[in-house]
Length: 116
Image 1 (spheres, one colour):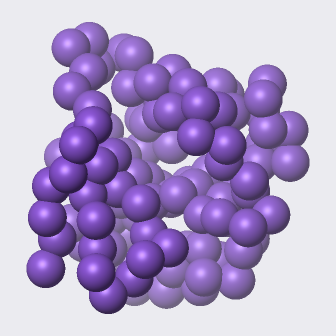
Image 2 (cartoon, rainbow, N blue to C red; image 1 turned 45 degrees about the vertical axis):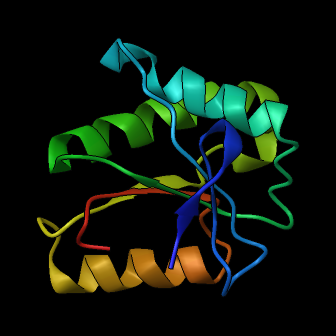
């Protein structure tokens, strides 16, 4: 259902309001900075949007959530503390709570593995 279009953006014909971007980052230490740069360049509005970032491992999801939280607070202070991780290593109650927090706007950015 998702097709690739110009500039590495994906178009989802079922959900027009969803935008996807794919960027290769050579240095893993630069991922959080690149994500925040992309949000700034594309006019991210935390009052209207949420961000779901997929990570390859549980450890990376946890690490990137911390790093994004540090990076984003400079440009979007209202997002400080509203970034978290989600993966299968969490107990069921924790996963459910984080999922609900993301859906109820208590979290702006969720860094998840495929467990999401």
